[in-house]
Image 1 (tube, rainbow, N blue to C red):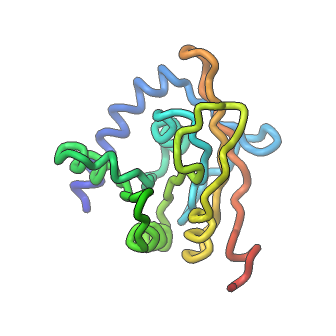
Image 2 (tube, helix red, strand yellow):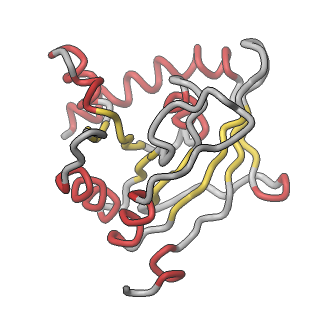
Image 3 (cartoon, rainbow, N blue to C red):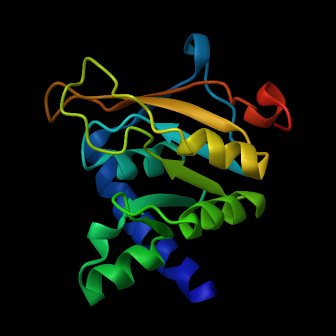
Length: 180
């Protein structure tokens, strides 16, 4: 565990400086206020506009170790498997979804850790619309009794523009839906 955290922290710190200089991530909360720091278990739910979105989210929540859901297609070599496992990624097979992934996410949330999910299920090339969300995010939040933190990544029009992340208020799905 500690070696996994060391690798994660090393990559995050060494990658953060160039990413922060390049993307200049600006985090904006509800009503333009600075968002509160998230604590405890939370399911971060975001739109997916580019392959760099996980990196952008990690920069926005630089103070947390974030576990991310990642398609099993990324684990196709030993080196990639090593890297994504050490970067706290949870593998999800989009074609043959297994309950193992669901339980792994719920267990991670119950350990008061943050989990990042892109409920659109794919990169959306059209920045003007959001694709239909898969229902798994709500199910995971309800089952683990942890809130969903909705965020919106606004795709930068040019590579040199500042990357903006809008952070909403946490939604307690368990409280909203009840025990059913």
